[in-house]
Amino acid sequence: MKLTELTPAKIQTWKREFLARAEPDPVSQRHAKVSVNSFLRRARSLFSPKVLRHLDMTCKNPFEGIEFEPRQSLRYRSQVNLEELVLAAREELSVSQPEAFKVFVLAECAGLRRAEIDTLTWTAFRWKEGTIRIEPTRHYRLKTETSAGEVAIDKKVLASFRGTRP
Image (cartoon, rainbow, N blue to C red; front, side, top):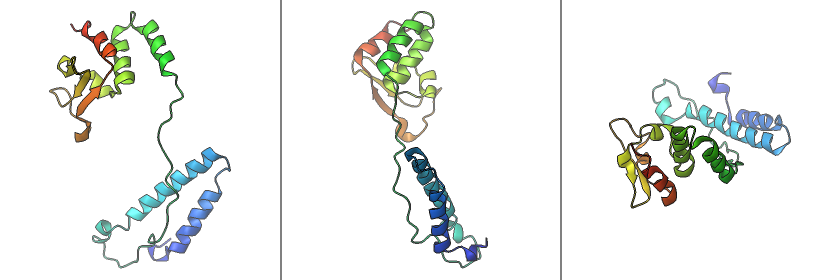
């Protein structure tokens, strides 16, 4: 299809047909809404002023007035029983693979990322404050500037690390 033939009406028709093809169950409907919004956002970006100023064409943005589906929550909802998982990890790993157990605890109890855990130094532990400081080090570059900060960790969990320092 030529860009000059692309109209809001054709986009709206495509959108309705795309959503209609989804199975009627809630999971499929949610997936279709997320997908249609994603496709529309990406296609609409081709008509942004930043892109159009580099092209020698004068076509109207066919996405003006096209409404998106209500935003679908992408928030993760765990179905894992964390208490059972921690007890099982303690039983299985704490003695046989203590380093793996430390990684597990830092990930699950402090929410640290793998790179943060792998490059964590002992100076990051703030024993009195009950926190772990995430900051750039010789071995670690922040994923984003907002990644820096203090991560609260239960003092009992933190205390379990105190005796493991080499």
